[in-house]
Length: 156
Image (tube, rainbow, N blue to C red; front, side, top):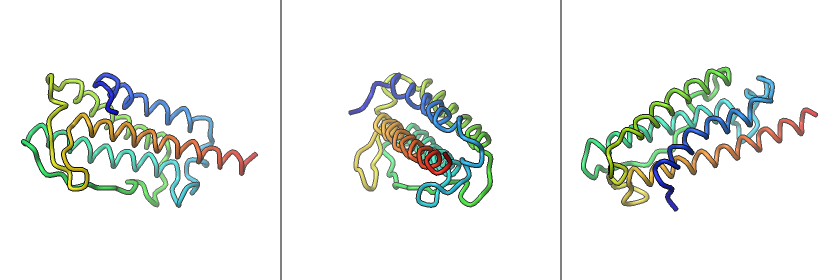
């Protein structure tokens, strides 16, 4: 199911607050520990940044070109193996996500229905791709919740 545009953009904006709410009570050392498949909490945010970058460029391309061919990508974290403070990672994600949401909000009526051809999923639209991003945020929020639970269990 695909949400209405306003709800999608609200969900994109609230994802950042949700991530901060999950991680904020933890000490900074927890955000840099390998807690899930070799990923830290900072790595998860770095992955969200990488995905947002890909999706934002995809949205822009779909506005500029008629029915472009899109190649699916699954990026790693931009912070893999680096020691980056969680707050810095969040600032970078907040900036990129804010810019994307602002851009989406300014689209003319009907623009979310612009189409492309995805090499794995067939016909897509900006609207369906925004929904993919909302679902992706939820998936990684759940990952962060599990990471927090693991940290708290091991550090009681």
